[in-house]
Image 1 (cartoon, rainbow, N blue to C red):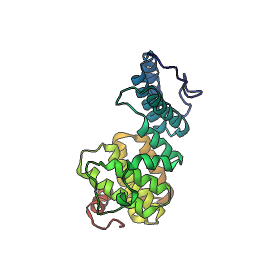
Image 2: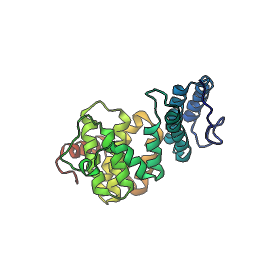
Image 3: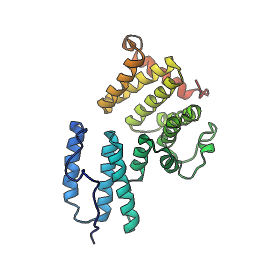
Image 4: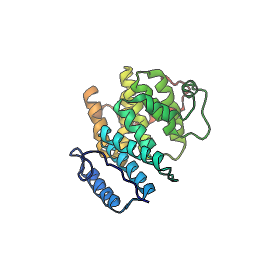
Length: 245
């Protein structure tokens, strides 16, 4: 049985003008996928999630939130039994748009924030992204030290597991950005350079973004920091017991 649903306004047929070439290609492929749906609710929820991810990745957070909310509403209203959901990518878009409260509630998954920011507690079954996403929320809220604890726990799990390279890149970048705000300039520079080493392997646009941060705050950094030294500095922090550096 089909489901009559309105697509987010002005996004039914055309990609955002902000989309980079690779994103345009992805959008075109998702358009083809959408045309094949024919009222299949579970697959449409999947489509909503992929669109949420696409626009979140491109930094178009309002549109990403619209798609995410569409997927969540559709799943709730139809009661369709599917593993597909747009909740996670919706929370990412909410977080990065400044809507921290609903994002933080989702990322906590029912665990108290006091437990999460306790450096002596590591919860069974949680991945590095769990602590990383919560840490990012806390950083945006200006809670620097609790955020750093979450990032440290996240880094320990990421570096000891089989996380995606982009997760390795994110944690280096986020800690570097946080330390920059805390005016720990030497460590910030090293960690941001370490993130460049990871981003260049998987997503050059984010590498360019981090390089912009480095050039703005550390003119001539490229002649003063060797990538191997930057990575060694990050690894030493991960292995240390001194979360605060």
